[in-house]
Image (cartoon, rainbow, N blue to C red; front, side, top):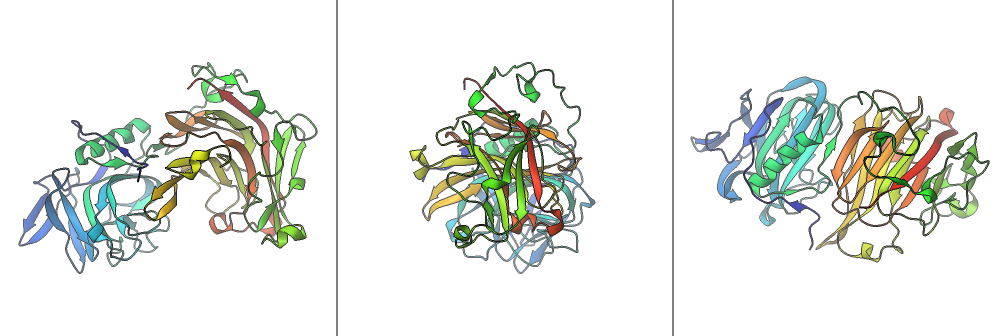
Amino acid sequence: MTSMLTVVTASPADIPSQTGLVLWLDASDGASVTAESGDTVWKDKSPDRRTLSVCGKSKPSLVADAMNGKGVIRFDGNGGFLVNTVRGVKGPANVFIVSRRLKDQTDAPKWQRLVSSWDGVNADNKAPNFCVTGDKDGNTNAYGTVVYYRMLNDVVLGTIGIGANGNGSQQYFSGDIAEVLIYDRAFLTDEESRTIIKYLGEKWGAEVPPAAGWTRQGPLGETPKRVTDAFPLSDQTNTGGWTRHVPMCDEFNDDALDRSKWIDSMLWWQGRQPAWFSPSNVTVKDGMLNLTFRKEEPPAQYAAKGYSNYTSACVMTKKGANILYGYFEIRSRAMASAGSSAFWLQCAGWDNPKLTSGNNGWEIDVFELGGKAPGFEKKYNMNLHANRNTPEGKQHWSAGDSWISPFNFIDDFHTYGLLWGKKNIEYYVDGVLVRRVPNSCWHYPMYLIFDSEAMFSWLGVPKDEDLPSTFSIDYVRTWVRAE
């Protein structure tokens, strides 16, 4: 099996930043791991020197020379550690964990916690709490040494569970944890997170998730001023060497959709049920492309396929009009309902025979916005989707994150950009970088897509009084350069 993960080669590593470090557990440090009366005591190395207590039926144990020649703390699925409340108020946090699960550690229940935060009231997977599981889908498969990284907004650092739920009573980890770093602050640049990931990867011989990057925590700050439409808002002096890619540019100043560039449906999908992509929900008017979400019954032939009660809309580039790498910018306003307003790129199998084998990236979501979805009004949701081959067959993999904006996305038009390069994928809002991830596998030509969708299990069902609602796009501009 070919791994999607990047192996970090060993070399001397710097000590991680101490600024805002509120918990640091290091199983390789003999001074912080001791055996007292037969019990393993794991001591916090952060400036606060917090105390850990054992929870559960069994006690984690130190195993020497277990990972890259260093010790680890071994959890058997029946116990873990707890740390008393670190920060009771909501705020940003950054969490790093080095762990693995061996083949003989795979028989414990699902949803095992590596790190958990509990406020004493809500479940640890409900805001303002958070949890990091050994597998994002809760599975108990074996995995090699890996660096997990979570960037969090508006969370509490309540009772912290290490290898256990923060309430101390369940979801114990079965596997090895080597190091844990928790910061109670935002990371303002991606260099901060990359430095710590590099330190952990080199120290433990660990693999790094392919989309381990950085997401902005906090406001945009000063935004760039538009001087020219010739180049992206984030690069008005064109330091990137961009040229316009006319087939994927449109100001939508005509009275109808430009059929030489776009289709008002989707080539391989008819919409997320129960809402069908209806061409009648696509209009061009007053210099805008409008995609509408309605409460109405679809035609009988689509009702027979499971569509009902709602229709939505999609616009994408024509068959064969795909692209490999570029800068994509739109100015738009999200619809004022819980329907999704989305801007994304996706591969088609007929264009990319390699999509049927190996590990590959096949979708980049620039945004999926729930303009009036409770709790999502200010969430800028970004994602990357890929496939990986495993002994059990091909599995879906994704790497999503959210930036919390200071404004609601339905209140006004904003400029959204994506730089899809050979080395990195970067997301921009109003010309300011909000996320950067290394491009580990998104190297196949993709189609450009805008749509409104029914994401009821995630964003909720739109209220009848909010429908119809419309996702409006002022323009789309695309640039290319030599990669």
